[in-house]
Image (cartoon, rainbow, N blue to C red; front, side, top):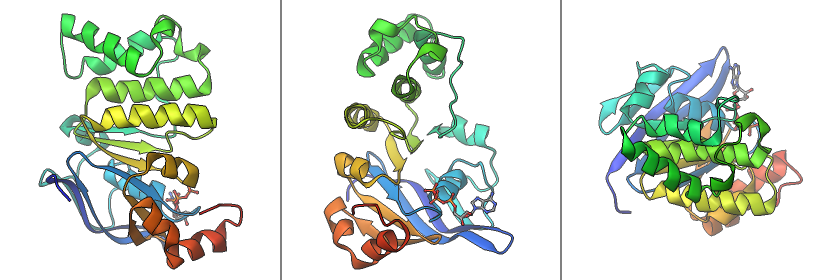
Length: 243
Ligand SMILES: Nc1ncnc2c1ncn2[C@@H]1O[C@H](COP(=O)(O)OP(=O)(O)OP(=O)(O)O)[C@@H](O)[C@H]1O
């Protein structure tokens, strides 16, 4: 695989009382990479995501970004270093327009006229140019997700962490979301946490599979879909999931 390692975890884990939610995970993300993290309910995906973004301090192990330790940093410090996060919790300013929300993100890396250029470009990329003056509170669910992805496009973090970016979307909306994520990948290495296998199939990139707080498999979608351990993990815990 090409590209330098930009984000790395070694022996990374966290326990909540007696629950080892993430045990001791080794993980590498390379420059330019788009990686999907999957696993059945309770596998530890969201907890791992929160360790990477600084929302939880690790109980054990290390996380480094461009060789610098993130272990003791707060989420805002990690964001400033260049790790952008889209969580499942909405983070838009509801009373502000679509363009204003993108504008605020663009100002993290540009000033003056350049901000306007970025905002216009991102509105085209997320397909919401016609709704630029609409308050975010008035948008449909999928459109709101795209504005949040637009904020990532506008701020161009070195790494973008996306937690279930297509949750609650129709198939067509998910397709559009995949296109937007591909645009993000032009500038940022990306991690997508997801438990919807159909969405992972649409993305079609390298996949890391979590189960009970550990990584049980890593590879292309086809490789992991054939892996007996992965199939057992899904079939044993989510009978309706088609792997
Ligand atoms: N704050 C917490 N306190 C105690 N236990 C927790 C906490 N957060 C997560 N856990 C436990 O850690 C394990 C992993 O949970 P996590 O939410 O990371 O899984 P997940 O793979 O993201 O699942 P899902 O797909 O359902 O979101 C579960 O057993 C969960 O109950």
